[in-house]
Length: 202
Image 1 (cartoon, rainbow, N blue to C red):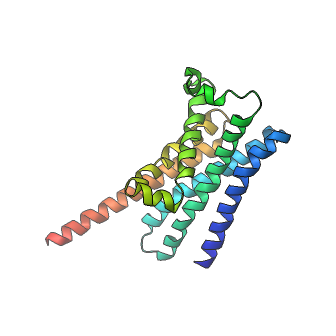
Image 2: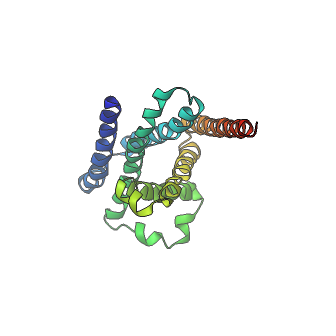
Image 3: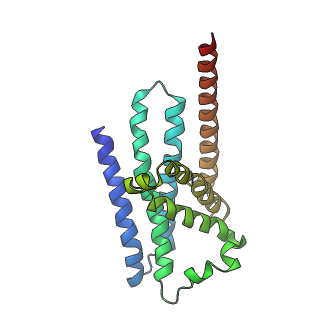
């Protein structure tokens, strides 16, 4: 568990650093399309790992050692969303920015260049990042888990954007894998509950 905590702290620290670093750097220099592309890959890869940890642990329920890695979902989520939100803040503070004003414009929700997918990722990532803390858990209580389900639109919006706009074969593969694992894990849990109910009535 100690190693998991170390990795967790590294992921959270990297996320916080990037959240501060990306908007600040944009004031002085353009980091370039290539560097941005690499950071988007890091963000999406972290989201993929976040999405597969839970279903894998559920599928192999008897392997208790897998359960401890579920805790890493928080760090992976913070790292992934921090990159997206960092670029979002960069767009807001850029000279002559119209990002906030565009929220009220139809073009913000346009499918041209798959802008809608990008913005779904931006907004859901922002909400997930803001609620990835114990204070939000206490305030939201039972609704906190419902809010965290935004991880699904966040992941699929990002995946579709990378697949359609950036022609990413990895994004397509990742979405198939995640979808398959989630459906398989749901089926395993469903069958397990049916079996338990059947035994209860015997």
